[in-house]
Structure formats: C-alpha cells, structure tokens
Image (cartoon, rainbow, N blue to C red; front, side, top):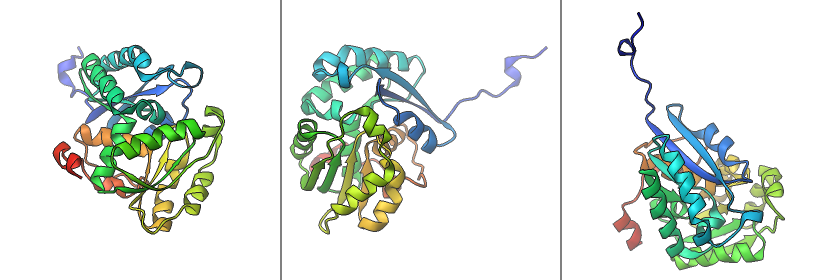
Length: 255
C-alpha cells in the first residue's frame, strides 16, 4: 500500500504573494517568467484602480482581505503590487496598509513603493530620471512621494496614457525610446513606474545604453520579495539590481 511517508514532501524555497489591481495584466506573466523555478508566486486581485479608485485608507479593508487569503497559501511574503496606489497617499497611509497586510497574512508585507525605495537604497541611488504611465495628477503624486523620500528627480515625465488597456498594450520599445530620450549623465538610476507595462523586458538593453541601473515596478517588487524571503539569486534579464541584497533598514534610512 502506498504511504505518504514513503515520499519526500514537495516544498518550494519560498512562496510569494502579490495583490494586484483587478485590471492588471502584466504582473502575473512577468513574475512567472522571471521567478526562479523553485519559488512559487501566488496572485490575488482587488478592485483598487480605475473605477475602483479611492483613497488608500478606503481600500485598506479589501486589500487586507486579499492578504488574509494569500496567507492561507502559506506565502512567505505578500506584496501590494500597484505603484500609484502605494505611493499616492504618502508614506503614512502606505505604512498603515502594509502593517495590516502583515497582520492579516501572517507573512512579511511589502508594497511597490517600499520595494522601489529598498531597491534604490541597495544600489545607493538618489539622483533619478523618472517616467510613469500616468497623466499629470497621478504622476505628480508619485513625484511628491519620491521627493518626500529624499530623491532628486533630474528629469521626470508622465506619459499620459489614458488607462490600463493602453498601459498593458504599449510595447516595450515605447518605454525604451522614452527613457533613451531622457538620458542624463548625472543620473544614478532610471525608474519606469507602473506594474502594468512591458518595460521590464528592456532593462538590460536600457542599462547598456544609459550606463546606470534601471528599475521597473515589477522588477523591483520581485527583487524585494525574493530578498525578503531569503532568496539571493541573480536573475538573468532583470539587470544590475539583482546583484544586490537588501540594505539594512538602519543603513537605508541613513542614506
């Protein structure tokens, strides 16, 4: 008779949970494409953008509920993966939601905002060129968040895409050209914001052209989630960021 005791359990190195906007179509394919084979990503959707948009405090309950459900999957880390949602109402609102996510899931909790700033701390970059998919209002909120965290925006541009359908349909070459046109010799890093764009696939080519680290929302989130879960792999195709480990909170705060 077959007995379970006769077999080794199948246990991945880590499980990563991502809470994404209901309209997002890029997080799942990009994370699944780049994630190490023995690390398992899990995804939950929540109404947090477009017709569901609201202040982060009003979205807290639905985000926390999805974090709780991801906790049932025994994830090591749970990430609120939406740049505008996590940055738009400032660091205090973000901190409150991340804390609630951790309590609900029983796992380490992150947001896109936190992943990006952790990545910038790891590569020791303060002078940025910043591009987002957003129209003026949304882009300004992200600018305010980044400047409030101590970053100098040498150049900054919101591309003014009209919505999620356009964001996820715009090809990677569009983002390559946008960043190439904003090249700045003083830049220590280039950041392309939005979890619903194809820009991640152009990171190596952009770094070669620009001579500096390039970050995208999905790349930074995967890096930070892996590092938080204790996975230190370098992932081909995701640029120089993956040569770095997480900086300590003390060191990051001092930069």
